[in-house]
Image (cartoon, rainbow, N blue to C red; front, side, top):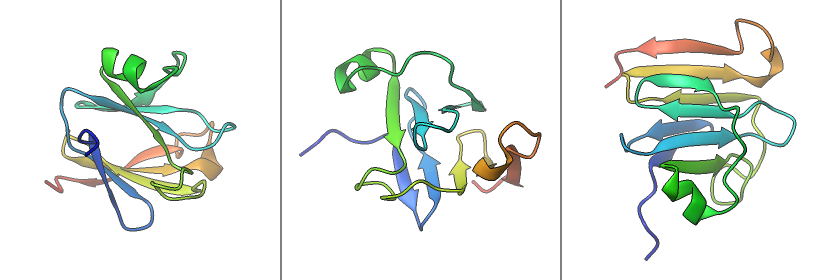
Length: 110
């Protein structure tokens, strides 16, 4: 059917990055910062979002809209991301602008 996604969703608020060649851009509503998940961990995503899936694929990105019906169907205050660097990150959207916004939740989960 559709092409393979670069992530798996787990539970009510966890994303698992699974494809090394494709970075994820996590979008949690319009008001929150966008986060890029690479094979080396997490970083802010400052570029313009791709206009469509084709443009995203050309840039080796997959845009993950957290609030879309096929993901979690709502914006999240807490989101966990298991990255390919072997760490699970906790993103607390109530702490934007502080050092507690993105933290390592667990190391070595792989």
